[in-house]
Structure formats: C-alpha cells, structure tokens
Image (tube, rainbow, N blue to C red):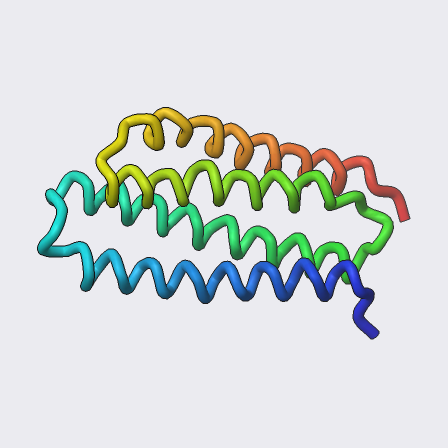
Length: 128
C-alpha cells in the first residue's frame, strides 16, 4: 500500500513532468520564430532542468515509499523551489526579455544542488 506522502510527491512529480512536456513543445513550436536562437537555448535549458528535477521528485517519492523513515521533505521542497526559480525564470526571461528573471536563475540552481546533497545525506545516514 502506498503512503499518502509518497502519493502526493509522485503526483506532483508526474504533473511537473507533463508541464515540462507542454513547455518544451511550446518552446520548440511556439517560440521558434519569435525569439533569437540564444534565447531559445535558454528556454530549452529551463525545460531540461525542469525535466531532470521533476524526475528527481518522482525518485524522491519512490525512495520515500520504499524507505518511509528517510527524511525527504527538504529535498522535495528544494526541487520545487529550484524548478520555480531556475526553470520558470528561464522561461520568463526568454518571453519578457527582463534581466531580473535571469538574475534569479542561480538561486534556483543552488536550490537544486542543496536538494541533491540533502537527499544524499539523508540516504547516507539512514539505518534500517
């Protein structure tokens, strides 16, 4: 039987994956003729990291289902924050051209890094 926290995390991850597909298609088809190739690369980078970390959220949900005592909430939240601050600010920068969005992107990248290391730490310290 699946525990409720794992279910919520998995549903969130799957929805974020679907959103990444949608945004990737928008970038490939909707933005292709509207922005410079350099900005399209930035949008694609946002989509790529969105995918990676949505998959990371699914991984967190699976880890939590298998090992419910591992503390995964911080990594889950950091991945969500990272997707918003990194990927969504890449998207907003490309669409609006406002540099303020580009300046926020490294904060999201830092959230991703801390999330992965936090997850590694929690798995490392887990004892059956």
